[in-house]
Image (cartoon, rainbow, N blue to C red):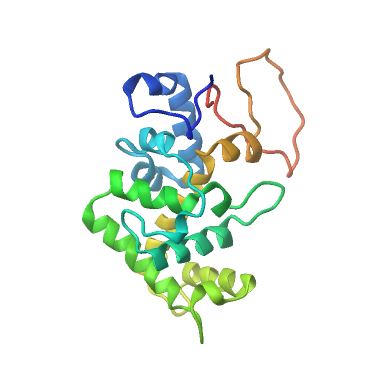
Length: 212
């Protein structure tokens, strides 16, 4: 059976598909999307190995995580959906990006880095003018996130911390089976060469070969 993030076991043999070209192709694509500095932080060390080993959980926001409290997990779920809402593909929460972020931080980040992620989630949770972030309308949630990026009522540190959180949520989405095979064009095995393929602004980028 082809390995997916949901079925991988935590052994070195399970990750051999990631050695060589496929791993380098994925790293190159993520570097192009995130930028060199951010990609180095998000993808460094054992990040990819742990990402593929993560098992999607249903309603992980209803329980405390390894790093986040249960209320923080709920806030993280809504942040993910404001960034990656449901379209023709599932939303961030439907592939448990909030659970992924919690697990990734636990395994791959220092305690100081974990603290910074907790701080920005707490700040977003309290950013609503009169109520908690999760109780706001979807458009109001997105507006708050835009204000963080534009530093409207938020500091440069807030903007940086949020950008790192956003990249980690996106990383979680695109290392899920849905993200790789539905949101990206998926090519499960190498095929024949076709040059000069017409594209337009709606053309999707390519997922990695041998990804699943």
